[in-house]
Length: 65
Image 1 (cartoon, one colour):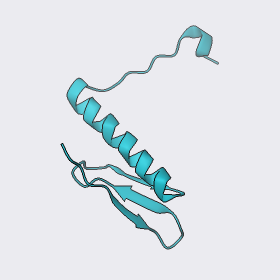
Image 2 (cartoon, one colour; image 1 turned 90 degrees about the vertical axis):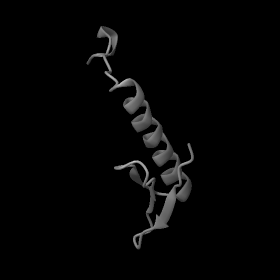
Image 3 (spheres, one colour; image 1 turned 180 degrees about the horizontal axis):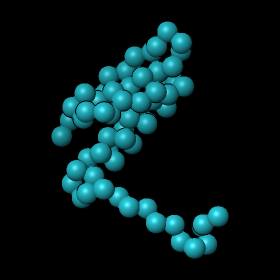
Image 4 (cartoon, one colour; image 1 turned 45 degrees about the vertical axis):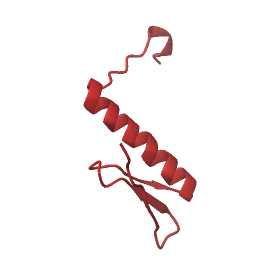
């Protein structure tokens, strides 16, 4: 599967990265690299949840505050 990342710089200096083949996969970053990294991570998460279902995170007693 090949996905295209569209990248654009906003007027305020932020970068926006989007993968149009995955609805909702759009993120901002302070740098171009940060925006690309974030949208790649989001896309992987969305694809994994489509395949395997939502992830449930449970904290152990030691991690609860």
